[in-house]
Length: 272
Figure 1 (cartoon, rainbow, N blue to C red):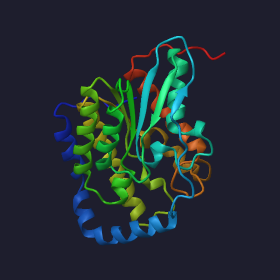
Figure 2: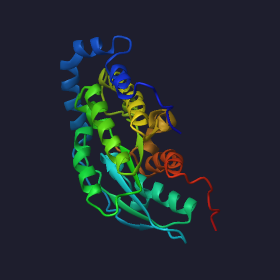
Figure 3: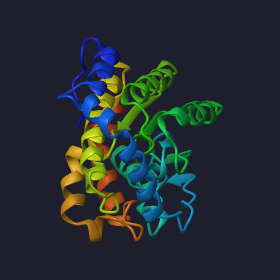
Figure 4: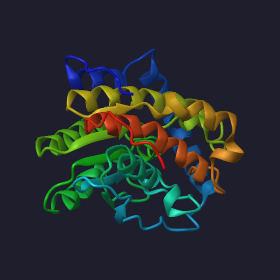
């Protein structure tokens, strides 16, 4: 699933990111409170008790040529909180691609815990040092932009540039847009309500910019946000911020159709 392309691209996306029902005005009057509550929320979540699993390697098997996939973004992209490397988003997507295409997938995880959109350029640098370049890049980004109060327009402009850079070298790009931060229980009010509004505004603008740059956008908040909101004990890990194995599986399942579409893979291979 993806948002339709929008004529005007990132320019409209940036306008959407800073407009919408007095959002900017609301933010301006509460920014001091938000900074304090964001700091409190990070304290409640605490430092990660684990590091993400290493996921680099060949996933699946098949008769076709090797597919090269990179995973970029933040801790959600890295799978922090999963119980097993095979439960991470990147593994779920890579395994699905392999099964659908009858091709092995060479997976490289370059996502970094705590990354914001401004950190993607360095990750892309590392991805493009590889020869040949990846066939597919999957990106999850935005949550840390919200918690660090990065202006949405700034995030969107950086994301569009990154997507365009990858597309220009022939790499298909799938962006999982910012998740709904209103589902995260450690966030106090009014941060949770404003975080939801901010994250959904950013997600919509990310989708528009991604499509304008030639990528495929997946609205994660729309597709799986209600499940996370209704079942926090099952969908979040111990820290109540990062997804659990179940949460990551659902994120991967939401991203897979767009990855198949981006690579023009249309026929699923039946499982034995």
